[in-house]
Amino acid sequence: MTTKFLLEESSLPTHWYNVVADLPNPPPPPLGPDGKPVTLDALAAIFPPTLIEQEVSVERWIEIPEEVREILRLWRPAPLHRAHRLEQALKTPAKIYYKNESVSPAGSHKPNTSIPQAYYNRVAGIRRLTTETGAGQWGCSLALAGQLLGLEVRVYMVKVSYQQKPYRRSMMQTWGAEVFASPTDMTNAGRQILKTQPDTPGSLGIAISEAVEEAAGRADTNYALGSVLNHVMLHQTVIGLEARKQMEMAGDYPDIVIASCGGGSNFAGLAFPFFADKAAGRQVRLLAVEPASCPTLTKGVYAYDYGDATGLTPLLKMHTLGHDFVPPGIHAGGLRYHGAAPLVSQLVQEGLVEAVAIPQLETFEAGVLFARTEGIVPAPESNHAIAATIRAARDCAHSGEPKTLLFNLSGHGHFDMAAYDRYFAGDLRDYEHPAEAIQTALSHLPKIT
Ligand SMILES: *Cc1c(COP(=O)(O)O)cnc(C)c1O
Image: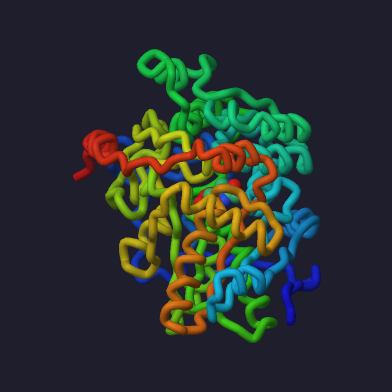
């Protein structure tokens, strides 16, 4: 009985897969405040040229620089596991596989993009990077990349996570980054929010505003984003490219590919290479899983909106709950984002990717079952993918169908034990879908004709 499928270091992908080459329709362009497509020059204030090129590229394959591959080899190729014990616990005929992205130094998939982003910035002569972080996973990943590639990193960390996850902050500092609880009084965006909402738990949208404002104001500083943008989706495809080879080693192919969705990058990373097969005619379902308290893909609208809370970023055509929607302070901090990647949104809109929203308690129940069968304590974000996988496996138990399920274990939960404590103490709850808050936020969408 094989439980683990391992690739040689030499099988690390040499190229990233760009899904844009296989989309049925071209992606709607980002727009400026005047409603016209943004010029590439406007992006150059905060991004290096190569990342801007990748953002708009239509090439199917883009080469991974050798120095980036050398660093990725510290933990890649990542293992793919067959979850025999979870299958047995569920008494399901389904075969469950998971790609294990928890093995990176930062504990999640996010260094797959922080490393190339830091690399291209260094090549462009940039010395400092700013960013935001929710649960701290992205901040850690960029801190790691900055350390390995010789760039300074400043992180605006969403206040509720800063309080809930002090050790994530310590980890960023260990890798040499500066960390502040957002909103801060160091930026106009932060001060503006603090004036109207002094008790805000913060949000990714607010922290992005702060990081972008600082990067735009300094020539030696650029901004790095951990998800949402096309180049981030691109860098994450190493996950699915490896997983496709590993499923072949297993002599199997997934009926359903499942991943949690915050900004969309770990989903895109696993699912897009399988979308390439789907575009070529193969049967495969792709399922993005989001929290019921922040139901961007399932309850948001597909419209142009800002990527941040105060309107500094270009307008992106995406599923959104409105840029000023502040989600409840759930423990899956990495999934508390008002929008979703334009590429993932477009595929949902075109019916090529499915989405489901799952309440918090069900996700922790799933994560605990996973820990007790497979051993790894998953991140609360990953618990969403596990919960959806368990739903599908239970459906198979009812129907008797032996489906093949593949999900992304996007990270481990070693820094999330306070959340597990609260779950065991019965202190966690399901948040009602905040329909009124969403309606209000949606009424603030920018008007584009
Ligand atoms: C950040 C994060 C996510 C969600 O972010 P995406 O942009 O949707 O990938 C999921 N899982 C973990 C462990 C994370 O750190």
